[in-house]
Every structure is written in C-alpha cells, then in structure tokens.
Length: 377
Image 1 (cartoon, rainbow, N blue to C red):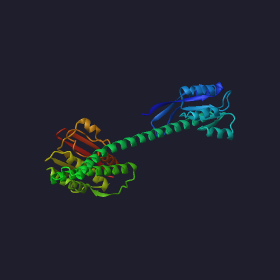
Image 2: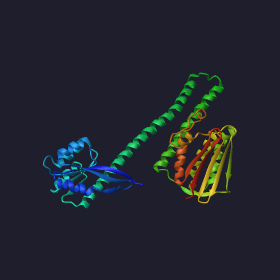
Image 3: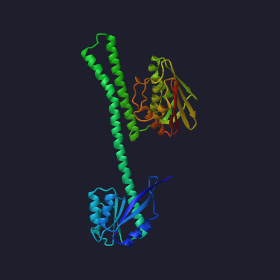
C-alpha cells in the first residue's frame, strides 16, 4: 500500500489571477514517485511579492517554490539568491513572461531547478512540478542514505574496536608476564600463558576472516564460482575439521542424510561457510559429552540443512537478537566462549543468495536446532 506524503508548494507572483490558476491546477494533483511507495500530494500556499515570500520561508520553508521573475518589489532572482545564501532544502522553478537566455542562465546559476515561461498550460505546470518533486525526493533519500551509511560505519568501527580491545589487552598482559618472568619458572604456567595467547589470536583471526567474508558478500566483490557440488561432501569436510575439538570434549558429531549424494549448483566456498558456521557453533555452545546431529535432506527443488546440538540453548529474547552483526549472546554460560558475532549474519546473507532463509529453535539447557533451506539454482 502506497504511503501518502504532503509537499508544500509556494507560488510567488504579484498577479492574483496567476496564483489562483496555479492553485486550481494543482488542487487535486497527486504524483506516484518512481522507486518508492510514496504518493505525493501538494499543499499550495501563496505570496504576492518576493518580500512576503522571504518572510514566509523564514518561518517555514516550503518544498517547492514557483517563483515569478518580474514583480513589483524585489525580483525572483533576488529571492533565489536569498534561498541560496540560507541553504534552504527546496526546488525552485522560475516562471516569467520575459523568457530569455540571460534570465535562464541567471536563474540556473542561483540554483533554479527549472524554467517555465508564461503563458503555460496546466499540463506543462504539472510536468514541471512532478519533475521537481521527484528530484527533491531522490535528493533527500540520497542524503538520508549517506547519513545512514556514516552512522553504520561509525557503529561498525566502534564495535570492531571494542571486539579487538579485550583480546589485545589479554595478549599484552600475557606478554608482560613472559617478559618479566613472573611465575614462568613453572613450565605448566608458561604453557598455559602461551596457549591462552594463541587462543586469543585465533579469535582475532576468526574475526578478521569473518569481516572479509561479510564485506565481500555485501559489496558483491566476492566472485561466485557455481558448479555441481555434493552438499554431503561439504558437510563431511566441515565435520572432519571440527572433529578434534569435538573429540577433546567428548562430543559426538553424526550425519543423517536422505540419499547417497545430494548434488546442487552452488559455490563450494559458500557451502563450506554455511556448514562451518553451523557445526562450529553447535560444538562451541554444546555441553561436554554432548552430541551434534547434522541432517541434510534433498527436497527436489531445495536442500534443507539442519544442525541440532545438546548445548546450553537460548531464550526467546536471545533468538530474536541472534542474526544482527557483532551480536553475541552474553551470559554466565557464554562468558568464556570466543567468537566474532558475525557468523550467523554471514550465514543469512549466503542463504539469501540461494533464495533461502535461516530459522532457529532453542530451549535453555536442552539445545538448539538451526535450519537452512537453499533453493537449487
């Protein structure tokens, strides 16, 4: 359903008949703006002189100004100069019975969007107003988008700095211990410090790799290489990669599948990212001596992947926050679990490339099931 938006149009002309004619022509005028769901309608107000127009614009700037060139007092060019000096966010259309190249150049130099010579028909007026309104809406949307991008960049840098500060501080502390030899006489303590430093470095490396994956996906710079891939092979490769960590904690990873092979046209690297995120999280957030069950189903036009763990689970509130960038569920059970907070955001973006989606069901202290459906391309 289209959203209705009202723009204010100020007609500035010392001829009452001209002002009344413009108001009649635009009274019921509505415009559909391309690439938006907005319908633009106009609130038309009037000023009989340039001086009156400036007073009105000081109190409440309009969105569009229809500005007569020759009036009894100051000219339309003078009003344009005032608009320029005050950086008003509006579109100005010059109207005049004295059309000339010189006038058009002067008006354009002062920021006029269009030039409408008198006499003009209602149809010509509507075309000019429609173009000005469309241009104004597009400019404002572009400015808003740029503002949002700056905000996102700032948030991104702030969160990144926060995520890197803790591991860098920890590694720095461990290095000071090694440098000063405090407690390092015991080989077990020495090994523990080195091991913890390596774990922290691994977390930072994972963050950097995840950031690279995310930026490549969002920018479209990651070249996709589609080929016939066996989804089960991708699952087994990820399971094999996570097996050492799973074995260390007594976690059993098993694969259930609906057929011997499940081929689909896909980018092998993208499938690896999907399985690596799902299975590594299932192991990471699991309980010792738990289990991870990977299910891959061939459903003719799509592949359904689900990974179930017997881990710590999540509340409904946690699940709702889960897919944001840099989001990590932080509580007493996850305090010592490292991660970038980007994996599931990347997972959702990859799923969208295959017209798919990601869903999750979880129960606290029982476990979690992540499901991903990927349409075969």
